[in-house]
Length: 445
Image (tube, rainbow, N blue to C red; front, side, top):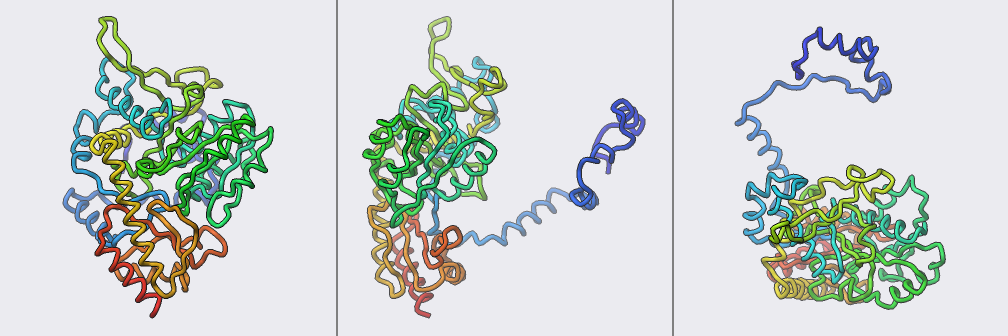
């Protein structure tokens, strides 16, 4: 089937113009073993046939499993109003608001998003969102390097393992020294981090709560870092900020995180939302866009792109990032979610998560074959040590209707029997009790 409108004569003329003898010659740089084996694709189907095929595929998913897995992405309840607002055609179809006069609604929505992120993190400025939490953490690293010119970055091993993998990938061809500092008993080894601070260190990356669910106050380590001219980047779980000390309160220079828990459903990798906020003095080192509020020539309140330092708008060497479309629709969902809950709602939500996780932890640790590990405080996620291989336990629990958590042995040596369990407001007391009973049955079988 021909998918182009060009005739054979037109194709020959174009090939002749560029000095190519055939279409295949255009792809001669691609090794033979990497070329498509065939373009023999099936004939098109009707709408009904396609819909039925997709339904058959989706039915293979286990959509009814009770979820106790987190590791940076959490199953929170999303108010119906979030879907209603974000599905409005004036929002859903919008792309990039280059023409301010035609995009006041979108610009205001992004401005309100930035304001919400600043209020949540206690930071001075926020950009108009990034792709996801890992991307945001990488961009924070580059912001720090641009700010002080140093090339060494200390990364606490308690940072999400997925983010660490992304940072290594993004910086593999850059002249940066990424130093991973091991945790001690699943908590940040503050003494070790302080020992490794030197005049080459640009920034320290911390996470709160960390990948193992442990919450901490990093005010002490941040104070020491600042005395040495080192910037501190903190990755945070936004729901936890309802009760935990914020990055701004601790004195962090840059706050980043994954915004999926702010009204965005779990999916197979996205689209998700990376948020980023910083102190005011770093505003011109940040990537992406910043929306500002001003007055037009008639004195009427209006919204504009205040900063957009990407290569399309300024000299390439002056660009801070190639961030383009960002995740504006996801950012809209986040601001709708935060607006619906409000400050008290976020605090109440965080307390519910904390209490339910504490309840689950208490009853799980009473099960024969479950050993308590790690020291509190935890937020809504915690590790347990099982008497059996965690991967095997997960498979057995899935057969019983539960996703019991993340087997840490997939990422860390010597932790084959460790399981990372997360509990959100969606899990009822009855579900938690039945989950514990099923886990006991599996372990004692």
